[in-house]
Image (cartoon, rainbow, N blue to C red; front, side):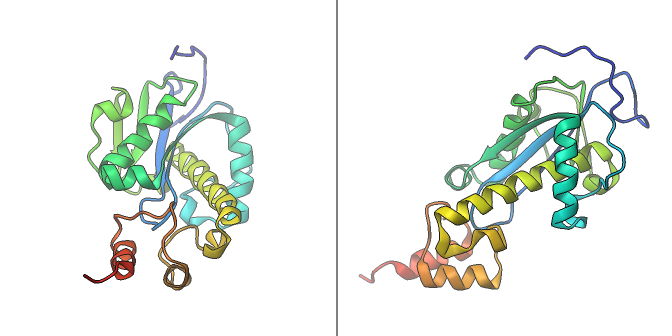
Length: 212
């Protein structure tokens, strides 16, 4: 990627001379669907819309913010599908989502700000300098932006998957382990987009195996 040299004000409280990307993911916990990470650089300052941790926003607020964020900055999306999560394990899958998000970002940042306290190896973020912040999706604007874009991207994907797999009603629970999802899993079994390595799904798979 070629670094884009431009004058941007991404995080005025940190610097107006370097390019800062927020990096966050959604979907570590669900039983089905992908992990989705977003690397986001705010180019044109976003005003007049709520920007915070996506979990603290309702769907309408997230959708409104998403539409403005997409027009006001650069977003790189990284997805890791259920089968990859089963193969790699959650930690490595999460790092791969981060890497793909940064690879798909059209601007090369000087600094990456990451939510959480998980250990992140430099290779996962293309050797770009980074800082991690506990509850960064609430406290750090760049991470909040990434959180919103990642969440809306994944929710929209799960709604599309609900049409492909109507029995599971993914548009309602987004793949998370709700009582409804558990009920539908017991009724219809495990689909190809379920995470077979997750304990509740494993238990259902084992129950479906014939006895010797």
